[in-house]
Length: 102
Image (tube, rainbow, N blue to C red):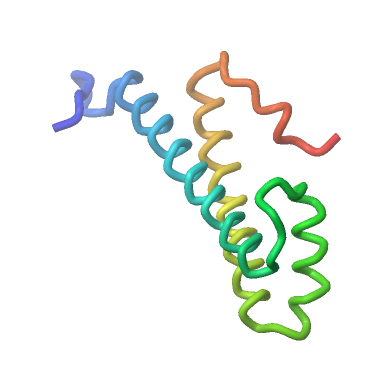
């Protein structure tokens, strides 16, 4: 049973643990989605993500499988960003500025 406060709400420590876990899991999902996309496009793991996504966008029109992998990568990105924003809300030491567009 997670730790709760006297009023029945979850403790800050439990919420931080849960947010960190979500960030780790969604981060792994994002890396896995990127790897599947690189493999499907037959590009090396060292290829820059922007290049891979651009290539996927070009090939997605002709290949439903590539389009599905591109969509899965997009969804994984959204989940990871959401988890990191939630974590940053709870822990001010988490810097999400590198995730934001310039």
